Image (cartoon, rainbow, N blue to C red; front, side):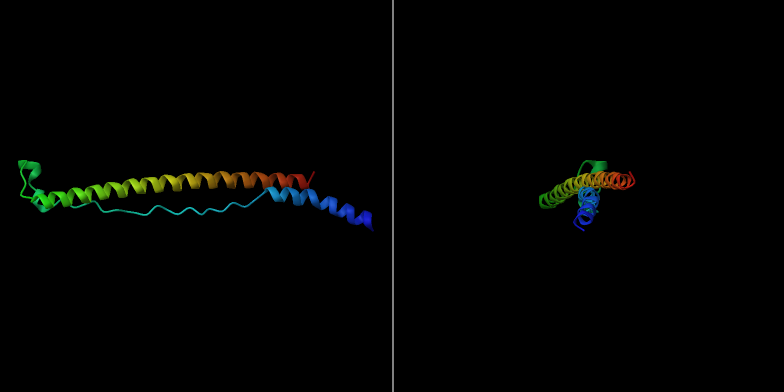
Length: 112
């Protein structure tokens, strides 16, 4: 009886040990936030492209520049988030490939 139990245990261990190395990866990345709306050019600058003159007060120009700066920061943040998301997706794809190879080796080992 002991020999049968020991034999069953030993025959079960290699398969179980192989399964321990195959882990099913999970993806926890989140898509970057966006889109963003470009700042609207103030009406007081509408003729600037033609006449090189504007009717804006200093506070209007400053407010527009602040909006542009905020927009650029948002785009940079979006770019960083998108890059991180892409890297996480690549890591996940690599992990899935490793998982598939591990599973294939496990199945092949069971039929040797």
